[in-house]
Image (cartoon, rainbow, N blue to C red):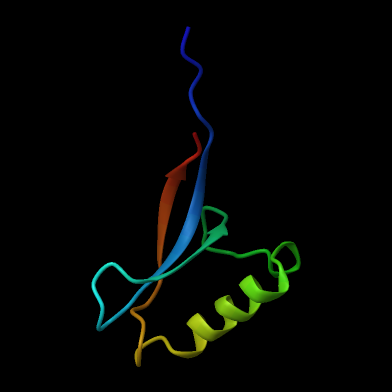
Length: 68
């Protein structure tokens, strides 16, 4: 019997200049990222991504990500 895999979400920032590049971070269905739950380097990457939206990265999209 197949049990459905729980769906979580990711906040994805796509590069404006390099197709297929960008950043993604775990979030809730509304796009809220738990900063306290991120490691230091991931938190720094998240803050960087937010700071360069419109210059290097597109506005983030909330996407479902099914865990395997």
